[in-house]
Amino acid sequence: MEKTTYVIGHKNPDTDSVVSAAAYAALKRALGFKGTVAARAGAVNPQTEYIFHRFNATLPEFIPDLVPKVEYYLGEPPVCVDEMMPLWEALSVMESANRQVLPIVDKAGHYKAMLHYSAFAQNILTKINPRHKAVIPTSLHHLIETIKAQPLVIFDRDTVFNARMVVAALSTEKFHDYIHAEPADNKIVLVGDREEAQRIAVEAGAKAIIITNGILPSKEVKELAEKKGVSLLTSPYDTSSTALLVLYSAPVITVADEGIAPLSRRDWIKTAKQAIAKSPSRSVPVVDDEGRVIGLFTEGDLIKEANIEVIMVDHNEFSQAVEGIDHYRIQEVIDHHRLGSFSTPYPITFINKVVGSTSTIVATMFRETRTPLTKQLASILLCGILSDTLVLKSATTTDVDRDTAEYLASITDLSIEEVGLDIMTSASEAARLPVDKMVRVDRKEYLSAGKKLSVGQIELTSTAEIMERSDEVLLGLKQLRAETGCYLASLMATDITKLESILFLDAESDLYSYLNFPSPRKGVYLLKDVLSRKKQLMPALFEMVEKAQER
Image 1 (cartoon, rainbow, N blue to C red):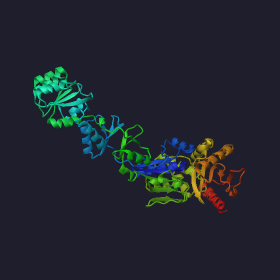
Image 2 (tube, helix red, strand yellow):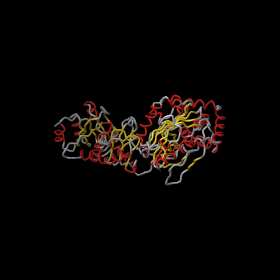
Image 3 (cartoon, rainbow, N blue to C red):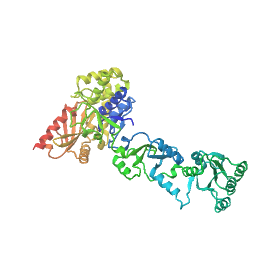
């Protein structure tokens, strides 16, 4: 199966994370990497939603986690057979396709059962047990298809009935007594060239008579069959071969194992392991959300490499990455943040530049590879840069960001000032979010002095509204810290008109005495001229946390 490469940003994604994922996936596809898919590791904030809606761009696929799932390890599409296919034909499919098992499906492709050799053998042993009269679910259609019989007289071709097979091997008199001893309306009579035996079977009202060895009945026998409503077939095979094929004419669903429950494509691998251990065939069908078979998960799939790979954008720390990412091969990292404790057991492409936005790096790569930028992509890339650099006013802004923004503005005919104001105004909607969502906007986790720190950030055109919700925000941070086990949980609210920020913070009690920011009240701190979390806030916080741990 073709591998899929997900281009994905950090958890609690900001605009730059989502935009750079969408744009870099488009660049990779343009360069020939067709299996590249843009993804995001969380819900988008109001600003990001506004940007993608304004420019009619498709948001990256939402992937809540990358915990190993069945769909990431599926191989080639399965070979399935229809539930009404004759068993003989299904076994032929197994042989020609070199399969040990076959999922059985209905006409819409929905899973019904599994055909495997254990179930088949058990069924056949029951049919050939001489101490029991075999009952064979079949129809005239199935008999004709399986035996390759020539239909001569046919009544009720498609109805499946429980048939009993009788071979006319007795003398004429004894055969007459035998076939009349009980109702014959479900009997399939196998007979050779003995015309009298053929007549007796017709007179007895057999469901069907199969004349073997390719022998045709007389005109009189055929007319009698038509009169009595008895179906008449001729088989090209001898009697013993025909009898065997009658056993194999049953619809495959009647001999399949209906006890094997399917896996969902989203089931975790640990669930698949348990299912495989219980399966007689050590394989389990996989279905989509509608119950249609999309794959067959086998014991061998548990040890093979996943069919997905990952490109990380706008982050390089696993603590900020989507859960489960460490189970897959990381192909590339495209980022502009500090280096965390990132390592791989193999070489990768790692691009980390001192710029204000990952969108700047991606836009530059379009230029370097001479890949045409659509107006739509250029528009969202411009917004990504303006968002992450606070309209080129953040301390992280470089000349490369400014040059790239001017280049993108020339493609899109957008005014940097006007579109910057628009997206920052849309970002202000974050101040009206429910507090449990607000404190998670663009939330990143860091590690300092062995302590886990949670720092979110929102951009506003005024901090007045959020200041009115101070008590609510601090309570939300307290709950967030309890849920995540962080030493510190904070939210940086940046006023892009006054070019300053307010830091809301809840932490372990030993930290507060080391926080040297101006503070109108406990947990609320004024950060004058501070716009950048990465370049201005985090270095200061790291230092304060380290001092608190040294005491």
